[in-house]
Image 1 (cartoon, rainbow, N blue to C red):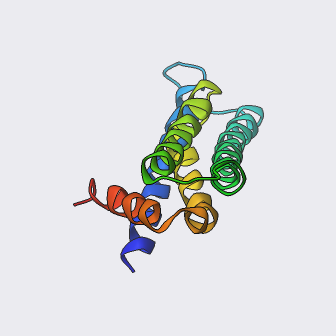
Image 2: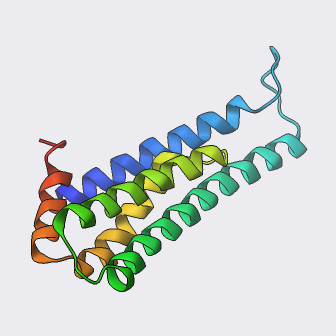
Length: 138
């Protein structure tokens, strides 16, 4: 239940940030009136940023899964944690550099990594990654 509520609140925060970015990009003025063309353009931008952030996060999550499965032949907890955290951070940097939502990219990268990459980690790496992820939330 905690994971569902926390995930939903993170996604709400990310959607709020994307909405703010969308409204911030609208033409400035004292009028609140939007033409139908501007409304469609704003909605398209909102969808583009949301879907683009999702795609960036999934790409980096899949990359962390593939690296931990195929490239690491002698896994060590430190290197596994470094790969997982570095690729999550790179998803944030990549999404932000592309004008997308870094928060949403990290969120979806974490979802994909938790479903696929954690099964590729050694016992010590999985334990360290799990405890390291829960520590900031404490």
